[in-house]
Image (tube, rainbow, N blue to C red):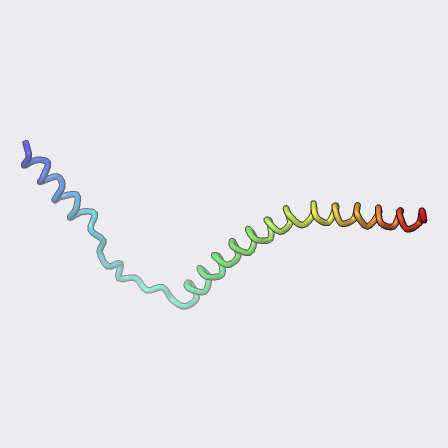
Length: 74
């Protein structure tokens, strides 16, 4: 009973062991991959800034309008 389990484990480890890819990734592909990752990170950052900036912008505008109205009233 233990022999089939051990044999299956040895076969699985042999098949799943990584091998060298023997592939060349040129400089254009490397720069393209870096640019793609950078673009995704920048777009996520800008989306977060946009989600946070516009509510603050509205708050600042309301405060400025209230301050202007207070100055005009005095």
